[in-house]
Length: 125
Image 1: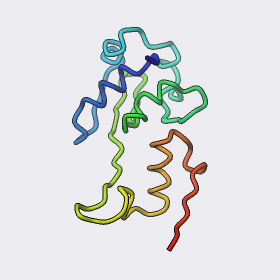
Image 2: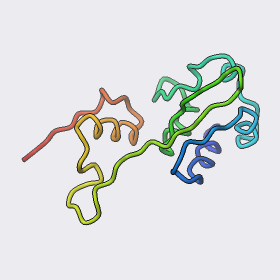
Image 3: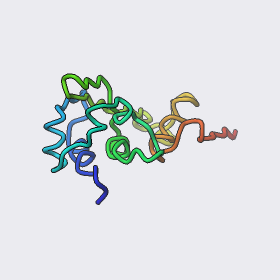
Image 4: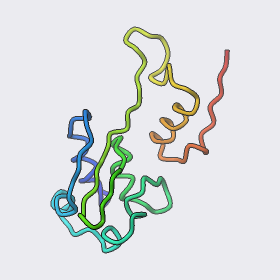
């Protein structure tokens, strides 16, 4: 099990109706170990960055959450569910139906953990 997966599992078990704010102490309790010094010092540690060795970000991004409202002084961070609109009930097509190209690109990038600019979308009629 990758190091930060317990955090992702915890987030996946929460209702997705609102953002959730956690203290660093609470996150450490969920993980079962102390966060690294860089998590307390650098905002970049909490970035929603895909790839580049940010394995911690994969834990929340893979479960459809992103970090927002980080406070290093208060030692807390807010996780917000990423809303990926679904096609209306009874509609034909994929779950991405009704999205703009940019919205679909971001949704696909999130799902496959790549940067949006790495996603190409072709429309065939």
